Amino acid sequence: MSKATELAQRDVELIWHPCSQMKDYEELPPIAIERGEGSWLYGVDGKRYLDIISSWWANLLGHCHPKINAAIKAQLDRLEHVIFANFTHEPAVKLAEGLASIVPEGLKKFHFNDNGSAAVECALKMCFQYYLQTGKGEKKYFMCLTEGYHGETIGALSVGNVDIYTEIYRPMMMKTFPIKAPDCYRCPYGQARENCDCACFQAAEEVFAAHGHETAAVIVEPLLQGSAGMRIYPPLYLKKLRRLCDAYDVKLIADEIATGFGRTGKMFACDWAQISPDVMCLSKGLTGGYMPMSATCVSQEIYDAFYADYQEGKAFLHSHTYAGNPLGCAAALAVQEVLREDNILAKAQDTALWLTAAMNETFGGHPQVGEIRHIGLVHAIELVSDRENKKPFPAAKRLGYAVYKRALTHGLLLRPLGDVLYFNPPLNTTREDLRFAIETTKQAMAEVLG
Image (cartoon, rainbow, N blue to C red):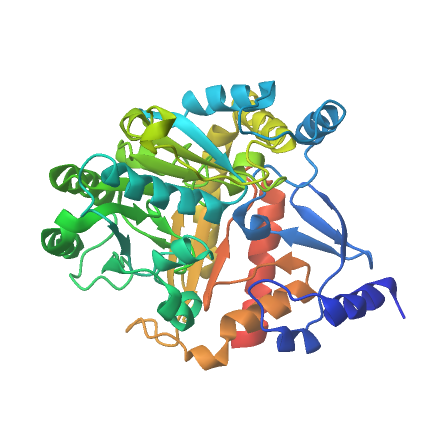
C-alpha cells in the first residue's frame, strides 16, 4: 500500500472534511499533500497539482513564499501569542498602521479576529449595537443580496442567501431582508454589464423604502459574488448603494474577505466604485493564506458610539482567543511588503489582460460555454446545456464536479462552483502555469462534455 493510500484511509476513518459529502470520498479519496511551492501543491505520491483556486481563494502570493516564511519564523522565536485584551505587540500595531494606509478613506479603527466568519459576526454586532447606543434601537435588522455568501456561523449564514448552505438552517437563523442581486449574465432587463445603468437597482430601492427605517446595515460582497458562481456586477451598483445607505441612515458593510488585496485588480473591490463602506471585513489574503486571521475595519463614527465610561455598559464585549495573534500579524505584514515592493498588483493586471484574451480564444466558441466573465485575475466559465437560451445543465448531472475530477487526474485543482469553472490563482502566478491551467481545463472539459 502506498503512503498516499494509507494516509487517505486513516483520514476517512476519523476526519469529517468541510463542505463535503463524505460518501463522495469512497470514489475520490482525499489527496495527501506533502508540500507546496509557488502555485503548485505536491502530493506524497510525487504528483503535483496547480492550485488555480488559491486553496479556497486565500493563497495570495503562492505557497511557501520565502519572505512570508521568514517573517513567521522570525516572529516565532520572539512571541507566538499573547492575550489581546489590555496587551499589545509591535506586529499588531504595525499591521493596523499598514491597513490604515491602504483601506478606503474613513475606515479608522481595526478589530482583529481569527477568521472571515468571525469578522462578519463582529461587523453585524457592531452595527446592531451602534444603533442601540445612539437612540435608534428600532434599527436592528439586516439587508443582504440574494445569492450572497458571508460565512458559516449563524449570523454570517443569516445574511447569506445561497440555498445550498442556508436552507436547512433557516429555523436557526435571524430575520433579514433580502435584495434581489444583480445577475448580469441573465439580466432580466436585457442590458450588458459593461455599459448598463443598473436598472436592477430598483429592487434595492424597494426594499429600502419598505424596511430602511428598521435596518441597521446592508452587507454585500462588492462587485464579485463568489459562492454564487463568481457573479460579477458593475461598480455603479455600489455607488448607488452607498448613496441609498446615506439617505436611509443604514450602514454599509463591505465583505472584502474574498475580494480584498488585489483579487479584483485593485487593492479592494470598493476602490473600483470609489466608495467607502462604514465597515469592511478582511481575511483570506490578509495573511496570504498562511494564518487564520481577520480584521473588521470601522469608521470613527461607529467606534465613538462605544467609547464611554465602563459603567455606561457601551463596551464592545466581543472577543476571540487568537485575536491579534503575532504570527498572523507577521504574515500579514510580510504580505503587504511583498505587494508593495514587488509591484504585484500592476503585474497581476498585465497578466489578467493576457489571461482574458487566452480564455476567450480557447473557450469563446465552445457550444457549452455560456459566458466567460472576469475581474482582475478571477476568470469564470459558466457551462450551459443551451448557449443561445443560457439554459443550465440539470444540477443532478454534477458536470462541474465531473470536470473537476478529470482535471485532478491531469494535475489541476479546479473545484468549481456548481457548473461554473473558475480560475482564482495567486497574484504572482506565471503565464506558463496559466497556459497549463487553460489547456488542462480544455482537456478535462472535452473528456466530460465531448
